[in-house]
Image 1 (cartoon, helix red, strand yellow):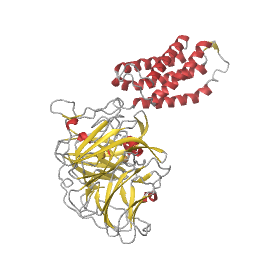
Image 2 (image 1 turned 180 degrees about the vertical axis):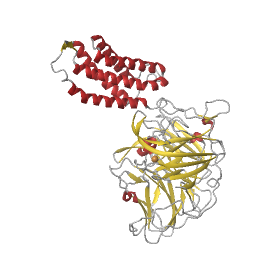
Image 3 (image 1 turned 180 degrees about the horizontal axis):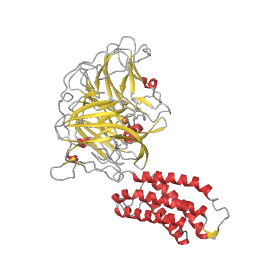
Image 4 (image 1 turned 30 degrees about the horizontal axis):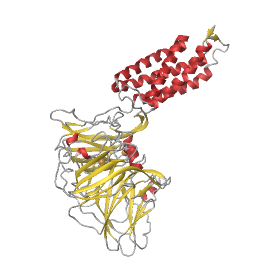
Length: 615
Ligand code: C2O
Ligand code: CU
Ligand code: CU
């Protein structure tokens, strides 16, 4: 009896079947993107699904030849689409990025071709005596190919989104186009800035900068100013600027794919808004945020009050990633890796505005700031003043990523004041070496600090219209969980609100004038500073207990492992607003949703067609 060699047609059949499965898994996405491609994927997938088993069960030269032709055709089309770009389709002439599923399919097809060709050339042979000898080699190969096929299918079923429009309505009568939600003209004093985003070198490493420095220049304005910022993009990638914590018109929010098209290289874009609230804020890129912020695209934004106490010294300190640093410790204060020294004289009143602009690791663990050498008060959180702040001794001030703490203190006579980050001693992998010292004289001794500052009991209680509201028009629970899974064409450590990842999370739909209550339930061992754009939360409770100190107004609520926090806000700023964890890697793994006003359309979309990826 003559047969085609099993040791060749076995693997060839498995490779063809694997390619079939991956082609079919990717077909639904291609159908929505460009129907003819979807049909092609189904046709190729079905043909391979027949030819693969046929190569094993009914081997013939015709079957082998058909398999080679299809594999070869796929390879040609794939190579063109990933290099020059196909001349037709959803984006003609634009090369696509290679992804995991198509790489696996390509490897399968490349490998199958020589096997089929050998079978065709050699033809059937006399069956060997040892009839099952081929099995030994086939089993490990089958395991490997099954695993690769599974990964290819799962990533193929969960691709990068093609184009997702986050509007709550299609443009039409009675619908507000987001682009019209701009700052109305007025005669406020104008503060104009130009920020050029560009690639720079720092200590021999590449960094992405605004005006050549990490962090970017501190923008200091006064409440009521009309701020005009021109962004010039000299980066090799599209970018944007988001004004973290500011309540501004939606069209100025700087979120790629929601409130604007990401600014392409070489282009210029102008943001304009009137600053309503005094306080400490910051700005950062909101396109590919996960990568662009740690590369250096962030800076401090200080809004001085029109009236109010003045300080002899008023410093903003942005703590963030400096890619130019040596491996190990990459965190610095205002761009300084070691000690940042600030001038201050004995007896002077100092306001220290601390901004956590760190990228963060998977734990989301907050920095634990500790001020040594003087009594101090926490006068504001996330830019918003606290009522009746009491003097504090050395405490651990837990500052989540994106959050701000404003400290006020009087400089002592003859010694320094020192700020250290105690995170290293509290269970984090990365040591923190940055410190801030103020004034001259003896450095205060490092003392062991146990007490953790508790914002739920600090300061003096006072009525807060939003937090004490009796009935809320909208109440939502957002349960945070994580698990491994497939998303955006790869395997990810998914981070979810109510079991879903962005952009498939359920938006919180509101109308202007509604009181909204959100309950964040953290079902993970990580920290999640959950940030809301364009609004300010009034904190209601932590773990079911109402806060008993000063009213607390935040744009990011730090929800610790297995904690529950409630916050509320008044929906008074129409638009489409992101609500996401500010641990950038968590947001990039899906922990993001929206607060969306009814009847708002946006011309922008998120996904591979537009190139807008706000995470
Ligand atoms: Cu600080 Cu959505 O951002
Ligand atoms: Cu923000
Ligand atoms: Cu998080």
